[in-house]
Amino acid sequence: MFKFALKNMMIKKVKIILIVLSVVISASVAILAYNISQQVDDGLKTTTAKYTMIIGPAGSSTQLAMNTMFFTDKPVGTIPYEVYEDIKNDPDVAVAIPFTMGDSYNSAKIVGTTNEFLNDKSVDEGRMFENGVAFEAVVGAEVAEKYGISIGDKLVTSHGIGEGGHSHGDSSSLTVVGILDKTNTNYDNVIFTPVETVWHTHSNSDEEHSEEDEHEHEHGEICAVLVNLSNMGKFTYIQNKYQNADYINEDGDEISLSAISTSEVMRDILENVDMSSHIVLILCVIILLMNIFIISIITLLNMYDSKKEIALMRLIGVGMRKINLLYIIQNSIVGFISTVLAFGVSRICLIAMKEYISSMGIVLNAGVVYTFEWVIMAAVFIISIIPTVICTFSMSKKDGIEE
Amino acid sequence: MINVKNVSKHFKNETAIDYNDITFEDGKTYMLLGASGCGKSTLLNMIAGILSPESGSIEINGEDITKKSQKEKDLFRIKKIGYIFQDFKLIPEMTVADNINILKLENVDTSAMDEILEKLGILSKKNKKIKHLSGGEKQRVAIARAIVKKPEIILADEPTGNLNFAIGEAVIKELTEISRGKTLIAVTHDERLAKYFDYTIDMNEVTGGRRDV
Image (tube, rainbow over all chains, first blue to last red; front, side):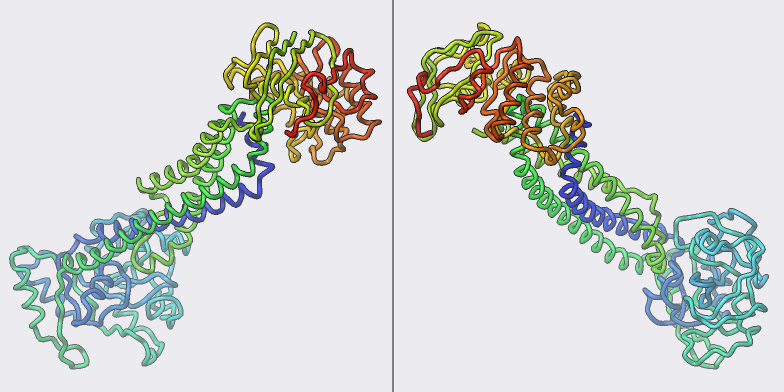
């Protein structure tokens, strides 16, 4: 039966390829859309709770949060290192971590910080960088894999974020002392180094930055401070204290600070993401409904074309039960192949889109399969068979013999 | 033995054919002659269980085929009857072997296929697609499919209808030879082929002649 079903499919290969293609395209779009929306959602949620407050230059709170938590977007600006020292010594502050960004190695961003920033991460090879030892670097797993970086390698960095910036030259190259374990988070796409590296790089650097350079690193300046309070009851007090504080930058200009609540900013971001997830879910349902429509039409046309073939088999004595089974096997094969291909195409697309999505601070993992994806695949498989069952059932009632 | 008794078949256009009683003996070959529309093919289809009469009985070896359910008729047709259709009823895109092996869907043994194709002189065409065969070759494939399951009864509805006389005569000769020992009922318009059959029945006499069917 199976062998005959395959042979019968071979004589209709053009139609079958068209059916498979239409199912693969629609199903893979549904699977891909759902997977990406979930991975983005998960990526944002897992990053949320690490720090309660971020203090940086006055400006967009979303930009400040995205820059420091997801290493995406451009820094809002710089603040004097003195801000970090004041916050660190504040009795109401439990953790204060300096954060600076603005240089890159190829497309990988470089974050200047202290090794406390990575205290929940482990190294796969080598060791963590030492605080205060400029030019040591710890590399995220994806960066190491992408650029074939090993321990001891020298990385010549560039000014600015992204490719195409001015090279800092060999004298400011980073020495890789460690490679982080893969985390499937935005940490995989970044190179970490002490803040001193950033300052020394810019003081050593003999290149002349153009006036268009979007962001300048000055010695002793950082982009933000990540904060955990020892007493959450004093959140508003600390927030007001630093937002109202007066600091002078190295140019002698007075600057204002912004102290944002990470949970509040993330709640706003997640609300938008949740809305997007709902839209994606609705789109998935619409795509699946379209799938039902397309498959039903094609199956009906196919079965209509098969009427002569069915009548022929009936005339020589093949029972309707066997004929039904034959077409159900055929469509099950089509459904199975389409589902597997749709899944494969969605994974290939995930890998292809990894780099683009990672620029937004989320690392896509092609190995992650959500329960709803299985539901989509099961639905596609069932949808591929149901029209055949209906067609063959209605034909059985008519006996299938042309009189 | 096939006994056709008091059979009457009505059609949707309100015409009806009433058959006089006829008996077909086991192991004999019959040629049914008659004008178009006199009910020759209808009789074969009723014997095969493809059509059901409105009244009367068709007993085959004591069993009334008209009383069987559709499923029983299908089983009876696939096991006991080899039916050769005028328009061959073959799947053009499939090979000769695949067209015969369709019977395997109902667990029919087709192991005699090569031997029969050899006898019919088309073994070399076994893996050729039907659409690449001549009319005579297609008819031989239809014969092979009908007899490969070693049926007790062979029904042939104008097996030479699509062939010229020379090829048609050769096909009938082969069909009667290969059907030796079985009951063969063949519908044909060509009286020149009567010499190859044990009996010739004029269906105009059995049914009263042509109907506007």
